[in-house]
Length: 188
Image (cartoon, rainbow, N blue to C red; front, top):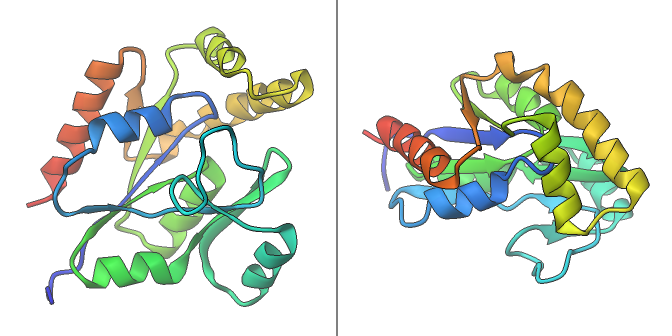
């Protein structure tokens, strides 16, 4: 058991900025880094597996967990709830592991209030036009949902100055290296 507490890293940014792709690409095989799986009430997309990308739970269960104060952070985003279980994060940090959360902007700012030394990293698209193209290319959204995500993205981009670091995900290789180097810099 380590007596050194781990570091908490939070990556967030607008839907379609490429957070998940970037995380998978950049952070594979970083030894002391654990990815914390969030809970969500949204339906799984094609290929998503419960307990791998997310823990998919009902609205009722999510609301019960809110009432029990089980979340480190949670938010209502795009008509669904997303949240990180407090116990998951604390257990890993206390074991000396670094923990990575991939969460929305509302959640990231909640984490900052509760864990002041968390390292917040904003993943931004190169432009709103590119963001819209990425969202459309996923073919997972209705037009109404797409417009909601774009509207939310504009608001989220205005909050990037509240983060410790901003990475523009224009080129996957470059952005991946930047994210990886940043995390490794703190793993001393």
